[in-house]
Image (tube, rainbow, N blue to C red; front, top):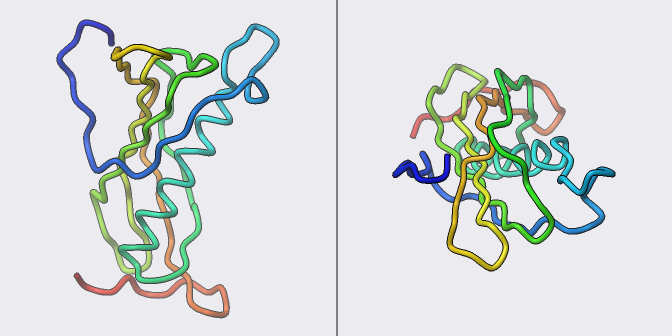
Length: 129
């Protein structure tokens, strides 16, 4: 993705730095760590939209285009692309700003499906905007 004029899709929802404890033996940041940050971002955005509690129901077609390295800043962008009766679909993109540089690369993207829950933990309708 370096050299492309691509820009993230959606709103910046979460930023965090990749630390040594988040790496595998090769020094790359675990893909699961990146996915967890994406899940956190989706939870934030979906809870705002649902005005309440949400849970992750599915993650669709996630593949990694570039690795994260120690010190990189991960920025997660989210956009609600569909609202059903009790669920929402979000487009999520994870971008790395390389340590001590202005270089930004798309690391991965996916669709997350989030479900709104009531106080008893049962699916509940997503309110109209």
